[in-house]
Length: 405
Image (cartoon, rainbow, N blue to C red):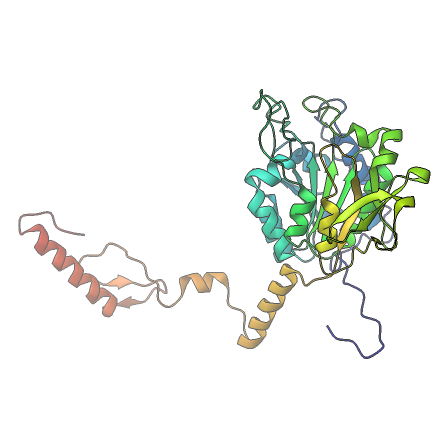
């Protein structure tokens, strides 16, 4: 889109544009978004914290509950739609992004959310996930990452660390894990963020930005499974440990790990790679990285995602990437509207399926009439062709063979 010289570009269109708002005389609260279903997760599960944050945040959007949809796949996190008093679907393993793509494309008046886990999204659902992000469908995807299969009782997942001892890897996993943020940036998702179940304020801040984004927003949520992988992210939850390890990503600010005298900054080295050094050791030849999530080039965002390591020594948290790009569903709707305008008429699906070149084979014998879908009786070319085929079949079967009908 071009703008007059000197004019500021138009702000990106909101991800909620076109979704009806609640009546002005209706005050929405967490209660309106809480269903009557008993929440059935294990005691201490991080999913409770995420659910509470989402239920508390949704009223901020000011949308009609009837126009909010949560679609999930299979897994502990995928019970999410049961516990929200909105529309929703507990669908099939790994396919939530595909179902949500159809909804978002057909219904611009919906705010469509996907809830999935590291196993559901990154194993059987991997292709659906990356293509939703590549297409930039207007979806908000919440990926709960606990580095384990919980619902099936403790098998290793695509994000489990090398060496993880689980029920399916008793001698330790030899698989190299996915980094979901790196994967999303590699697929050129237009919004990519990471947050944590226990940090309610940060989680809500990220959800707010993700909902407003037009396009695919992928939010990885570190979530504790107290039964099968307890303490997987404890280094990032312990107050003293976390302060020295987490790099909070804030637009326009230098990327720092830690605070005070122990602060380290991320710098570009001569190789072009990113490194982490104590702030007082930064030299003039090193360029401190100032975070810009709006950079169209995903290279630096991807490099930041690679600072993550199994020891969690340097863990970026926040919004890695937030850029504007045309969405798949907007483009499809525009294409359909253009085709209708060009044709000057709208043809029903039933008419297209029936068509002029379809007919009903009603089992009549040669020489009898046949009836078309439109109810016309004819002895035309279709009937003649059918007669010829029947005669040929009878000849092959022989005079004493069974007659073809």
